[in-house]
Length: 167
Image (cartoon, rainbow, N blue to C red; front, top):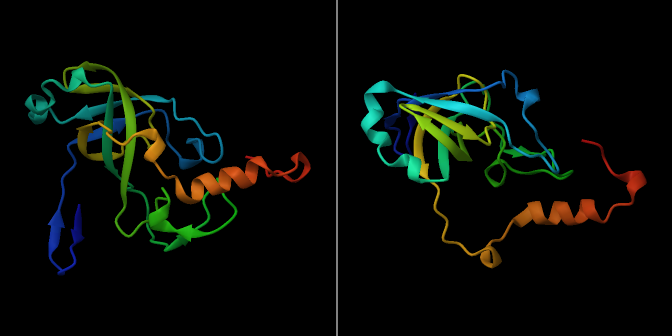
């Protein structure tokens, strides 16, 4: 994988793992209002990185930093499935980003050698993983702001049933 930094220099990343799951097409991944990510999968970490996994099984959740490897375009504004209004792509989780990087929090079900069994997969089978990090959040819930997502949910919750948009 190669991208340019702000100075025109090339940055190189190599995948450390591959996602194995049932999703083979983006249409299979839950999206939009009320979408729940409960699918299970395996993150197959490269064998030569086995020592990098020491003590990872002590964590309940992991950040997975991965690549939207099948995206072929960049779009600056998008209308996400959970709103009817356009937003800047950097204010969404849309895949058509300037750098095709995805971030997902998964729960770690168990570890078998270099295979991490996880729940909460929202990527496609074969997706390259750039990094894994233990999930640790020190932001209290009462201090989190959810921006346009909270506003879109409030609009949707106040719509009459007859004019609500389907999934």
